[in-house]
Length: 112
Length: 113
Image 1: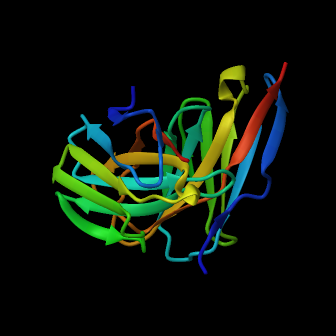
Image 2: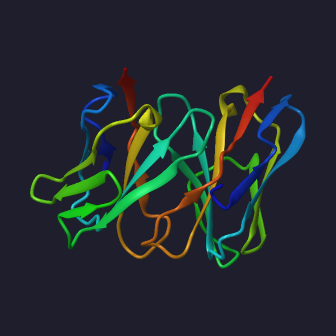
């Protein structure tokens, strides 16, 4: 148990669907992150939130829309995705910059 | 550009032997380094970290060595066990921003019985 819970664990959707990924952390951290993990590629940072404020958008297409209603919850809203968006989406949290990030087990996303 | 890389994509080790996983980094401003372990079907799990004012840090069966002169980081696992089979990532951070982090592509460690 890492203290970071992601749902759903698996998601299959068509390119015209709208879905949301959810992340919840029980660690009292003040920063939350979304990462994309594709096969044989390093983790790609997508978004960073500090104290509910978005501080980083790493040139992510607008079909990915994050939402952070409070320091414990993070969402990633998906709309009109492309097949190349199929990947493992990981959520993480940390207490500040020079502290390790704690990851959830991810959502395996498949775009048909 | 700045990058974190791993010398070997795969490493096979006899059970009971020590494992050494290497990582090269290129950002001389990096001041915090982290090792993660990722098992199949799970997210990365924090193993150990080290700050740039140190050159060695030990945990339970793991040791991280930092050589800033050649920008090299290594993870040593003592008495490797079957449960150590996983992909191991290094990551580097710099500055105070939570977003200034780069991950390596990973080394897959497999254990021979």
